[in-house]
Image (cartoon, rainbow, N blue to C red; front, side):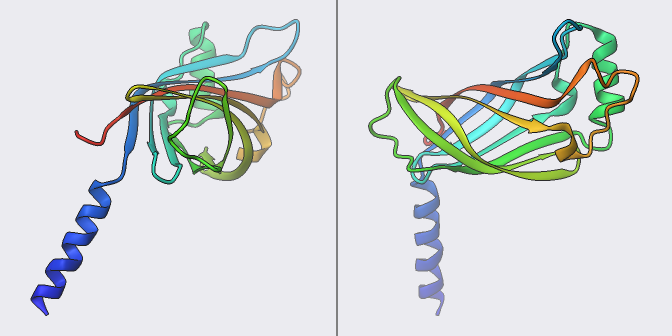
Length: 184
């Protein structure tokens, strides 16, 4: 019995360690909810953590909401206090799969789709068909993409005072350079 348990643990350990992982802690994500003729409503976060399992296309990303920076400090404060409620909901996550992913061959013209679930402000939304541009260069895989969500998908209320200045449709774009993490 102990011998069988040993072989099961050994098999699981070999299987887990054999997976090819790509990781970043310095990815970039932008969101924009600007309206024409009004002040830009745009935040950028340059400390996104993301991981890709190159064996099966599983993907996950984590962003600390207070890490978004704005041109206007007052806008950043309003974002954290009034819209994102970042003290109560400090993280946003995305978990999903890249459809038909295979680490070979990837080149600058590779385009695939990402399906998954975005969790923000305590709410989760399934998002399918995110168009990805993928490139592999030596030990780095780059993922670039963009998708749209509605503020109402995450129960974000836009006050009447600014409802004409802030779009209900939010564009989220990301640029991630994930480095092979297999031997670390």
